[in-house]
Image 1: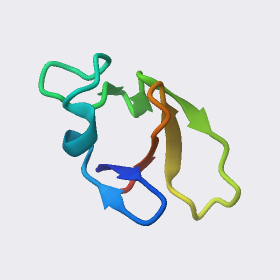
Image 2: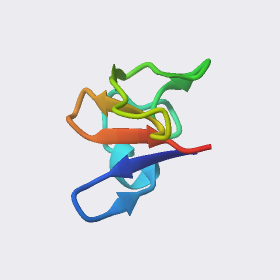
Image 3: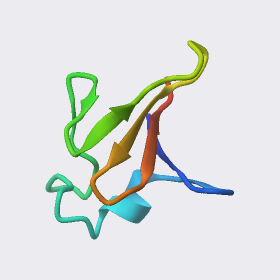
Length: 65
C-alpha cells in the first residue's frame, strides 16, 4: 500500500494525486513492478524503514507492506 507522508499526517495517495498530471488514469501514483515511476527512490537510513520515494511534485511517498 502506498501512503503520502506529510509533517504530521499520513494521507491516501488519492487525496493528493487526483490533481497531479503525472498520476495514472485513476488518479493514483504510477506504481509498476515495485517502483514509483513518477518519483525517485530515497535512500533508507535503516533496513526497518519502508521504501520511500519523492514524487515529482515534492511529496514523500512510502510503500507499506
